[in-house]
Image 1 (tube, rainbow, N blue to C red):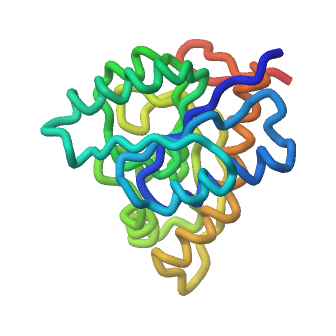
Image 2 (cartoon, helix red, strand yellow):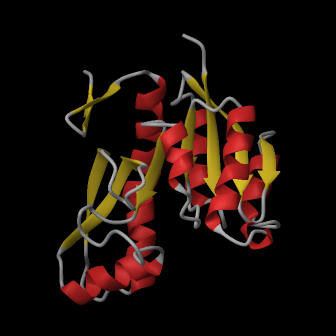
Length: 210
């Protein structure tokens, strides 16, 4: 099996990117390779993480574009030129036009810091997700890896992992625990399953072949 080319989309520090790089370096994604890291901002630390590991980087600043449609069209061209097999959102803070996910059906993956369908959709990103979880009084939250569609956080769910909410949690402490205990574990796992061709879609739901 040829190694699948993985393009990772970032906008910030790149902690989830680092989890993917670490998993790759440990041999946990045997049938895939991060071929390119793409950033919507210049100068973010995620680019340093990629460069330290010899991974190609591309920067296309969202701020240079008047709208998401024109930005998405140019990003799509880059992804097609890179011959991406899988595109992974890893803290990518741009909602792309549907032309991108339609060009890569069930080949775009995102990690969301909650158990979808809770605390997801428009406006639920970063600390806002954890603020909402704490305000609601839930005792369990977590993370979800799902395929990207034109519905925000609405694509088929691949993996989920629960994380306990603790007394005295702040949005910041809960965010850190969800990353460490869930996101950094299930995102590399989902990427590896995709590269092993073990994920299939049936009736709009994602399943894993044993």
